[in-house]
Length: 239
Image 1: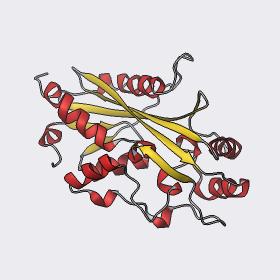
Image 2: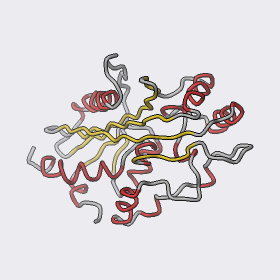
Image 3: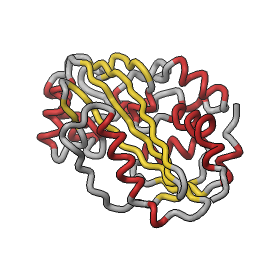
Image 4: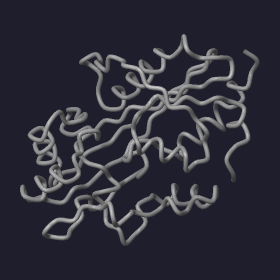
């Protein structure tokens, strides 16, 4: 498996300032332009779980419709943390970040990322879901993390790449096989220089069920497969 030649047929626009999404797509071998515009990120209150990021990523993509040329595809994404039937987005300040991490401590939550691909003649959306298990965190650990890692651009106030153990691959078996197939096995590791160091020396996340990249903010394997299997032929039709 290699990066699909279909990718080279398009001008991709990544509508995201997230350094994690930019990094992952670059590592996949995708050439793209970064273009961001303000979009109201409110959503109907009756939406739950994965339906929230699916709604928001499509809402973002629709805002780019007037800007799309014949060979353009805009990529939008939205990630939420879902716990106790409530959504956690990005924290507004230190206090909110600490409160979120206290809620996640010694608990299980879900991470949902919705992704939308939009061209002038087609729109498609999909989502990825993962379960994340946190150990019990001391308040001083939480405060240390918020002070030193400033997780204000991260849903749920944490980054998976900072909060996992560094001595074992973070990816699921399916993701590991995917990375090996496209020659990107180097992505299946945690950079120890960026991981959380606390007085206990322990990582926050005990394990993840499902996609690690989804928890980072962009499900690479699902994006690759969705475009190449389900959408490449449709996007390739004459405009």
